[in-house]
Image 1 (cartoon, rainbow, N blue to C red):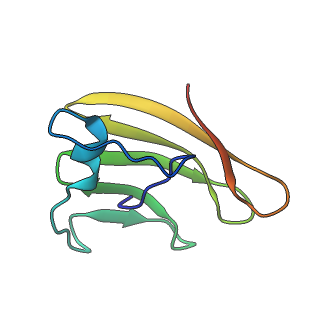
Image 2: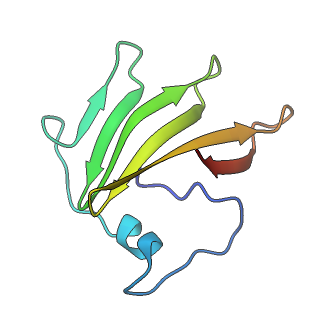
Length: 94
């Protein structure tokens, strides 16, 4: 997704960190790096060794879930928001 979606300002860095792997990404093209649906929502994207798939959205166009695959290990997450400002309140592995 190429953007930090954590719930705090603290971003882990370092060579062994999964977060540092996700931040480092290579270039992509429309043909190979990203898939969109009819509403132009991103449904899958590959950024270097990290792939995001099964990206779902709510009626407001906010991401509500996705699967992140790093080193061939998939993990699925849900994203919840507050009802006022659409700020992320939790990212939960399911």
